[in-house]
Length: 497
Image (cartoon, rainbow, N blue to C red):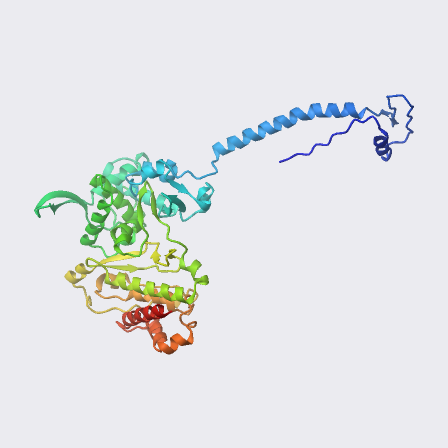
């Protein structure tokens, strides 16, 4: 900051200066100036007027050292504050990555990229203060000139709850006080009690190789060998991957995870896998159903410690829709219905159900392609298990009725689902309902219920009926049929615009 200092000029002519002095009320005596005399006499209430030139030099001699010391103190203070309280976020910092908690972490394949500076925060994520305000623990960065998203997969309180659960469940296994345990140590016995040896086929097709595998388990069940209180374990439910448990499903997820962590000891992979199963299954979904195989998810790059790195897709639908044209909105609706169809058809005998579909969880890329960027709330169902177990009404189609949301009229986005009917039915139209609820509810966010031009309504007179059936029909099979008809109609509209 610039400081303006006032200096009194020493001039040979003092008439103007003295006239200024005369105007003050404290001067009561006359000034006597004799020609040729250099001394000026001033009497004012017994005081003698001093030479302004000498006074100026005296003030400057005092003020200069003070200003110098102030400047030095300011520089030193700024330096110390910057070193004590960093302004910029260091994503290579161990406290940010939490590498010391490994193998109770998400992986280590991207640690070299973090530690060598290949991953650089951008926009507001560059600043350290974002950690105080960023409850979702989501940051934006660049990685090899690509825009990426860094996620810690949970709020800090949830991460603390995860650590506490692992420690409490491992106390009895390690026979040590919980205060002396670290989560990096505790995750090993916690995982080992759910590991078994399985024979897998070699290249010649022989069952000759033994590998460690995770067995299905319930994280809410209490381990009797633990010293933890009965109620503490029951507070921790785990991720959505524990819904509709199946050993075949777990084997599939495990194989894809190990394949993406080449070179890592298999047991270490299982420790990482266990951590993600307990906390958030999003990385498992994105690796098991990858973008390069046509699934509508971001590219998953890897993890370091308790931070994962994913592709940044673009703005979410809530941000994108207000400025979207009719053509763009119809294209987005077509893609969402196609996603519902893809999830319902599934792959390898597995079906995916998205349980928290919203405009904020779907992003739009520069190419107009939609991707689901929040994979935490996706349930994977093993259809082969349903066929083998044959539970009651397993082959009876189920139509979503949104039961329970009638008590929440103030929340038009409310979507309910039945885990039991997801796990025990070969057919469930939940995906079509979840998509059509966003497309065709009374909110009409896409402008397709009340904003279609007349020429489209005249050419496709049943379009409004199909849109209504997709959202509100309670007859099994009607919702899927309406969705497929809309996919055909929207595709034809786009081809002629």
